Image (cartoon, rainbow, N blue to C red):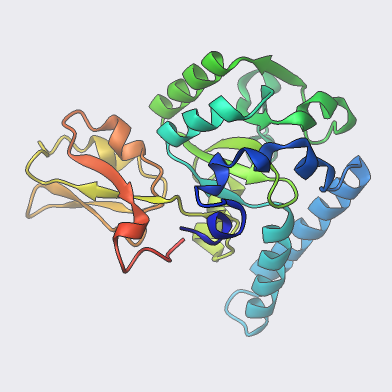
Length: 269
């Protein structure tokens, strides 16, 4: 189990612990738009400074500072579709909202940008945080939420939960590289904003027909094509366990297993 499961899971996956969506946890987080804006600006500025220092001894210091702040107020963890559906059974209310990453990176219009999800009691106060809930929100029920996630999964988006004051889980992102800043900062700059899931993809070559469908689904550079074998290769060390390759494989050649089953991976998040 990851460190968050150990600290906040009470014997289960931390994102399946209903306490982490509770009003009590929400009240423990920064509660004013000004406080949230200040934290966001401070974190963004520190990230920019760190990126400029890559390759220098100073980068290590910036990295430690950034990750300490991020892990206390705002970080994410990849969650595969089936576990995400379980979250929809325990978190309430649920609302779709615009994606801040796509808005800032691509300038995506609100109408095309309802790709993220707000969870929990904080959604009843969304009007107080206009910079976060830019464009407003749309409340949906649990059945609608699961169908919405299924549709986004088919499109190839990675699901992840995000905290807003650890361990309060207040949002779901449906991410893609390179527009997702969580994925990009983690992969390109080695700044751990996003943790791997509790799972890892396992490949069964006997079921593979060589269709290459899985290659275009991976956002984490974990799947390559072996020309000599005419089949894909999954680098389990790079795998974030999102399950996009699993849900797309027409032959059932890939499945997810608990990361804890593999000694070399059980602490690799």
